[in-house]
Length: 323
Image: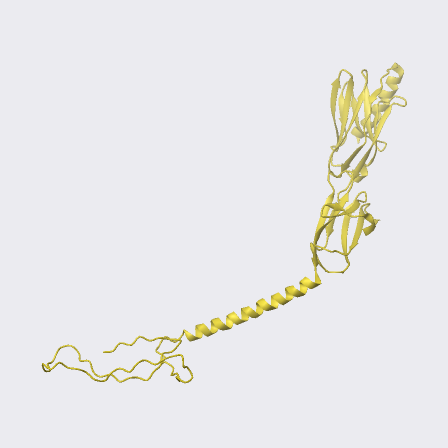
């Protein structure tokens, strides 16, 4: 409390003293307007001529920082600090407002306690809200109209909403934007774009305020489906599905036939039904022995073979060894 009283009384005492002594100095260059995002810093410069004694910074009429030539800066809040520069042209005081808030918006004054010698500027603190489109992709059929909704929430001031398609701006007549202000002083906006697409395209909603270096954006991919192509596509899908089912049945039959590794007798074929397949020639049942006589041997004798009336199967050929 004592520090605050000192802060208020000091300029009054100095003013009275300076007026009595007849000091004369002026503001060479006052502060300039600034627009910043909430939470960032705002800076203002005020340059005064030589011989200055006191400089007071005010925000919306309330003193926030005082600089005394013989003492330096008298700071009463961590949010308001200063940096000082001296040159041949005069003395410059830089006011720094930290962690700016919406309530900081308004008039910023530099006063040297001389009549009509206040330099002032305006501070605009803006809020970058959120921006979104609910769906990232939207599918639209041929000759169908669709509405794309872009929503901006918690902005100050209300953002300027525009639309782009494939990097080209869309005419404002094709979309409508509604805005409202909440009880917290922040603005909301709802922009609805109406169009009948003829091709697949990327739509982008942009929200902009002065303090933003680049607009905030949200995008959606609009997928165009041609009715003719869509029908053909469905037919192709059915065809592929049918072929997969046939392949599956064939593989099942092949696996079933290869499970039994034992002998399977050959099928008999009727030569009348298969005229193109000839039967094997008959094997002679006679065995010729040399006249020198018969003798025994350790090797097995070759006995007469009967002709088996089998036909060659067109599917399988079995090798037969005569012993």
